[in-house]
Length: 111
Length: 117
Image 1 (cartoon, each protein chain N blue to C red):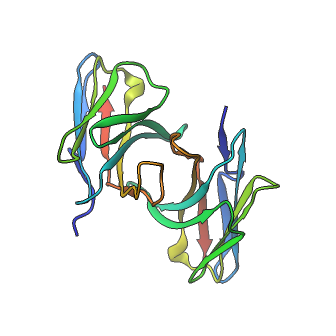
Image 2: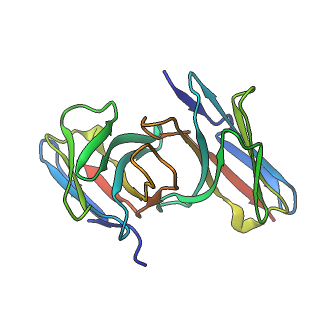
């Protein structure tokens, strides 16, 4: 079955460092990968989308890559801040199929 | 522009009861999808509607049902509630540029927190 896996349940990082989150997919060829941020008790908020024919996308301190050979997307937050602490979710969809979310990585940025 | 609105935000039910949750999408969005979120399982897809038609359905029992109205508002219903149905139910709307598939991000509401006692 199609699976989206985010390797780390939790990631602690020091303020100012780059946080790197991983999303792997199996039995799947998604046309798009998306990354969302979710704060406790709130709905997820869209951050970035990357298409299968794109290698890299950037938005301010955020960068996402998409490697269709490795079946992997990496999500980077550079110069991390305490306010970046949240759960980050990756999501994928192929054609008409349902959107599948990973279980998320809880990022804690330590001052 | 108003965001996605979900009502009620919190509710408590007992086993065997039924519940109806409502979702008003962003104006102009014709696609609405529902998700169940629990600590152990993450975001699980329930169903997706586009122009009043169910496009996709997740692996949930028939006790979970939904519908979409002509104004794109959507409701989901859970009958014969079980303890395991306690979760945050999230609705998301999307502006599909064509009927060929998903080309935009999902806009989520704040969710309806259901507790089943």
